Image (cartoon, rainbow, N blue to C red; front, side):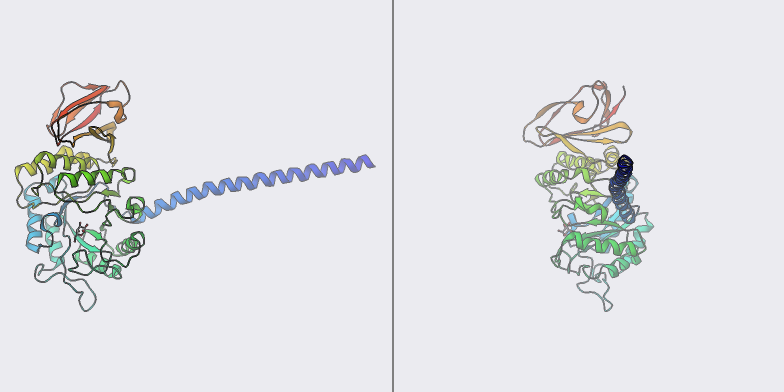
Length: 415
Ligand code: GLA
């Protein structure tokens, strides 16, 4: 009897233990599954949010012209129309320069009686809709400017804070294709709270509008901007000096990992052609912006382009690096003589060697430093000389550079 009871008790304990083990296994599986599905969910939801923003714009960095770096507030509709004409007649539009972007100072100081933004009558008498129609008739796109504050940065017109939906609708009704959104005269709230209000307003406005965030890199917009806009400024305002160009390129490089098709780091607009630098320095400026997948927004007077300026901004091979579908921003792989590289589609590589010093530099660098496997030989195309080097490279790449000059190559593995 005692043995039977013990036997029964033993069996019962066994059953209980098995039950407990099964329950424990099930619960830990549930925890693991929970984690997995949570991760999946987050991943998925991120993609969804991204897709919601993904207005189909900015698959490659935007190209065009903006009024600010040359004209500042001194703009009017004739200048904007002439800029559009010039992009077409110079052949630049065929190379991809499609946006004609009006910066600050286009509007009246006050809104109309319905609270709408209004074009400044003295300088834009035909209104923005007419200007958009004109720009569209040339096969180009129109960009506008506002601020996530009570005024724009010039303080000469109202900003969009508190009027996001109304202004987004106004822009859409005018046929606007691009909005640069500045960060002046705010209510003190964080850009990551303020900028998405305009994202949502634009989404509801019924027209795809490229959204360019301009909070100057203050709150590291590379970390959150991809859910909010198509590009984000990573720096304060550029000026027409070599030092300014280099410092903006450096600050922008820090965020290289965050750039991708649909969302780009923006080290500010181009100064090429504005007269403050040598041709070689402008070549460095343009090459850095191209390899960094920066927006290529011309900031000069495109109505009066010199041959030197055209040679630079019209360099198809360098533009192709910027517009490459892989969309990977270059990083510095060496800093004594600076070497910037980026992988490109088709197993190719872009390499930019910059001598930012005041004395000549000889540099020999290993292809392995660019992520090219050992023993690979590559053809090297010099993108400013427009020549392919006669002998394919194996192992090393050497260059001699005068002060403030650069060399830019497209490397293509052949064996
Ligand atoms: C800010 C921006 C500039 C320009 C001006 C206009 O400074 O960063 O790019 O738009 O405002 O006032």
